[in-house]
Length: 514
Image (cartoon, rainbow, N blue to C red; front, side, top):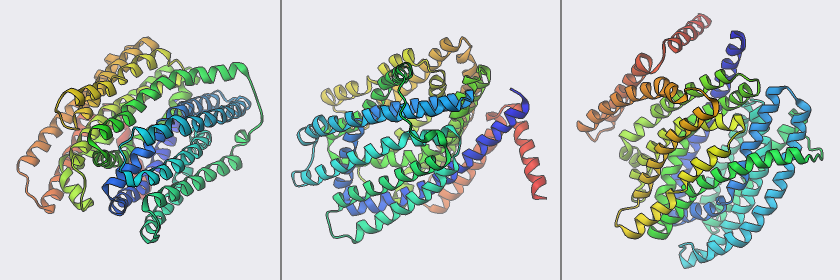
């Protein structure tokens, strides 16, 4: 790959990342506001009920999420190859497969899912009818979202990230309208919230579809059936299915266990913690979204070394980026929640801290996952890593069944498993590419983040040791911590080459301003 091509790729990735950050800032701002209003409007019990009932539908998400991964991979791969005709055929085949999945999801949701909702979930007797309304609209919303995936995948593969920013403005505007309508409408708040959520999903799905039809000729459906292509896509998706099921057990499975042993109030605490974590994690996911297509294209073009170098860089940047934005919340969790929410369920603060720490570990794994997906060889990876993740739920169940540990125990189990999975992913990638991945990862990623992280841990401890309950103290402390962190990033976290790149970028920006 020439230096010019590399520079062009970096500029495009930087531009797409900034666009996605713009999108994320809008979403995060609205989410932080709407969670507070919706929690107060619905109450802790109904809010927890909405999340756990909607989560039952999410149990079927692995059927479409595996296809989403496959769609993004195959679309980006064909674009990297420059084969537009095959891209159109792949899109049409993917859409046909989604129709099959939609029928399967509907059947499972209206049989097994409906039975589970009414017979196994812990739901207050006077809210069973409302829970069923929520469930039905959650099914409809999920199916719409599933059919939106191929069009999203096409946008991502083409690296047209600006569309997400524009659609997000529409989406968050409608979510703000939902908050207003939820307050003024006299009907059951829980049912109303579910109906309005479905309407928003319908509009957003339609918007993505219309955009693709007008901008990408290959997104126009033309009936095409190829048994080899069908087998290739479904085989790839099939092995990803196991990994998706493992993630399901890790997330919704834990949610159900908490509901069984501790009730919907604890579900509400976990839902709030995950809402905060989702907002923070968007910084990393946006960065990954802008880099993932390029990782796949490098592999499609046979540039394996460039793919590995990008994977290692993205892993380090992802961790540093997430730590930068999560540090204030980790240090001053209670103060921020007291300011943000007038009241919140027990365990919310502890859950938030544990989940963020776990996500910091997972941020190192995200680029490794993207690299496995780019190669298309995921069988061994999914069996081993998915098998390890599946231990989360049975271990958590046994812990709550036979011990008196509190609800946070299952989250610490998830954290431990995440550490193990990171090491396993590195070993498997090393075997797959026949390169010294573990050594490279340790030298270029682990050493910098441990060096920076350990000093920041000490600095945070000192701030908490001399803690004063004052917002001025918090602002001053955070300013000092951020200044120390940025200095450490530059002095310890970045390589000489990365520092040189930053200097040139700042010089270029400085000259433009002049």
